[in-house]
Amino acid sequence: MKMKWKLFSVLVAVLLLPSFFLQEAGAAETTAPQVVLGIVEDVRGPSIVVKGRYYDISGAPVFTVKGVPISTDLIKKGNGVEIIIQNRVITRVTIDPLDLVK
Image (cartoon, rainbow, N blue to C red):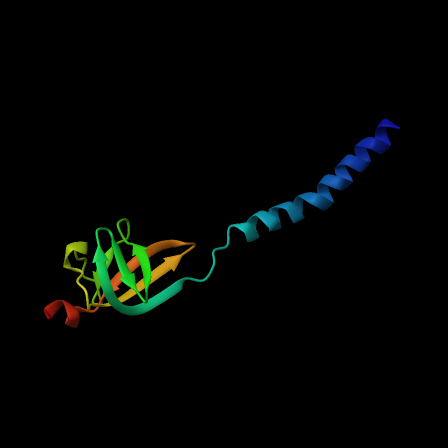
């Protein structure tokens, strides 16, 4: 009886463990990034308004289109903006450099 129980336990482990690891690997996958393109309608502290929605960009890196890092203080109403959101976190904000000149 003990031998049958050990054999059963080993068989269950061999059959179930691979599916467990496959599920864990699938859980680690991320969703496709969401891209928001628009014009900055308003700037309120660490947030900008684009297409009527508020985006808190305080923790996100901000760049020009050429990849030059800039301060969030340079973002003004009327700037063109691209916001990249990955897993509900803003991962990058890109400001149109032509709008920064105005």
